[in-house]
Length: 267
Image (tube, rainbow, N blue to C red):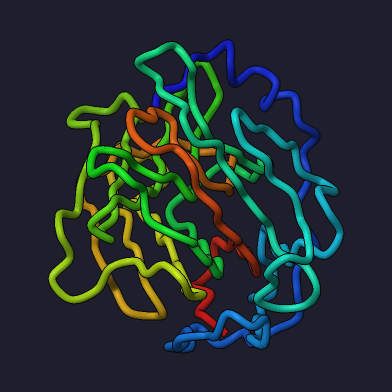
């Protein structure tokens, strides 16, 4: 994903704020999780002091919503916990080569500037994987919209169930980082998956760090030498920024947590 500064100016105008913290286990050691069913019977908690703790029960309150060739809403079609989850549907037949743009939807919020660590957890249900091997479906985005510190990173999935880390931080060595076909652990479709994204750098001024992705509590991949900025915006959603193949998708996301103190865990 590559963004122009002019496209991000509306995001910079969002009101500063954080979601109220959920009550939950304060243990630093995350639960290993498991394989929740698709029937909405799971449970979830988040640590004290979480920056964002969202179960999507109250609609888009506090979020800015953006979508292109897609729909995104909190509805009752497939909750993991409670009555609602974030439901994303992207249109088929969208081809960037034909000037039709992207097919993606996001909920967006400002967060305090990233320092040395950030932990994201969500339960994700994908109906299917991207239809083309060169197409990347984006879940989470972290970016800084400041002119003096502009850039971002995002977590993606590709057709072979592996993950990709798109690094458009404008740091040295930035670019698209592909995990490659996973040997033991990749993403799954057709069931709820506990997806975690852990972003770290040694100090608050370090220009590079690493980003780990976990599936159902187990480490799936560690992306190293990733460009870092003082990211002050977080996006969650799904879709394709550069669709050049089948662009239809349907995804549900629930129990989103963003924390800067500890890994959240799955349940």
